Length: 493
Image (tube, rainbow, N blue to C red; front, side):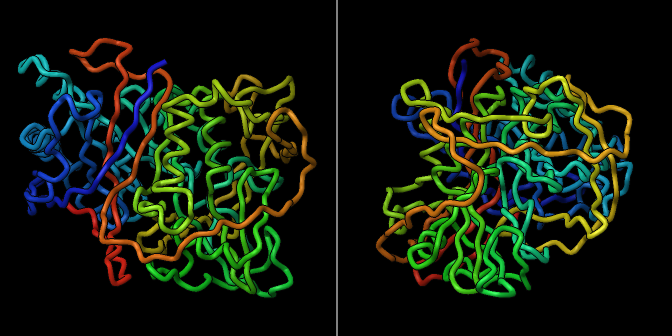
């Protein structure tokens, strides 16, 4: 089994007449300059990411609109990647056919991918260098996926796909919900497992799918402090974090501060924690929930994990008391170093096709009624979305994982319990211990998201199969300055 660690950083770009240019060359040198071969991981791959929420859709739409525009873009991308020593391109188009993007962009985006892949192959043959890699970040919401992507074609053209399986609930809703639950609840299919299996059922090879994991939480302001459970009534976001300063959002290092004086609970059915103090409520991930997600990734034979973002983890180790990057290190240990082989694996029990591809003889049917509105949301740390789509849909998932003719029979979601060493815990809530730390202001470090990949990988030309690779996909970053200010650097072409 091949494994790779993918780290990433942000490069400021701009587009002029559909060609990509660097407007801060010094920033590029910071990311593309590499130490000597004998001092770095020889399998490291760095990819340049173009797009993001703040980038919008207009420039993508203009570039995609004609073959000549796409041709100029492809040529400029190859020149930029080779000039600055990148190993590939990641496209972060949020989203084709939505947010002002016309419906035709669903197909012109596929045309661009085909043209990029062919150009990358031709350039590799001409220069006798390894082919440039091609990847994309995509939505994990089925309604967005249906409108925005030709999933099977993306699975054929891309080397890997990062599924944004987070921001599934947040302060835009009237009841509390977890940002990135592993499994679904009755009446609420939104979950990381559902998003990953949805893409797989659309025909994408599972080894190309990376699960998105957030190093931040989404917060709510409770209507009543005494009603603090999951799906409790809420009236907007909780107070902004001390450093990120964004209502409804806390970085993991800020959450470590919050939980010292809050009560923690564990959602057994979803394998994630939440915490509350007074009328403030936050759903988040910790090392334990990351461990369960890592096990799910390996159990279901997905390609790996993508983290948004490095700098929202406790990157200096001052806040959570468990060393630098506690969440990312958990994934690295379990997915890359394969610590599952030496420790007891958690046990999962699945009863429907929604949460697992391992299903029984029944054919569960899911009725999805989203008349309350489906928010199309940016990744954590970016501006809050305002676009809302309303839609009702019914879907049947067969025992083979196929999507069948719609019916109107509602799905009865199964309940699951899990515990280490094979012990069974009854569903419900149980308190967890708080995390102590030394409250120290973070320094002025700026780093980006990280991806951890396991399972089968596409081997670029010129490389031997079986060689571990690390791939880096820049997605976006936030800098926390010494005086406690949080500065978000937008992604621009």
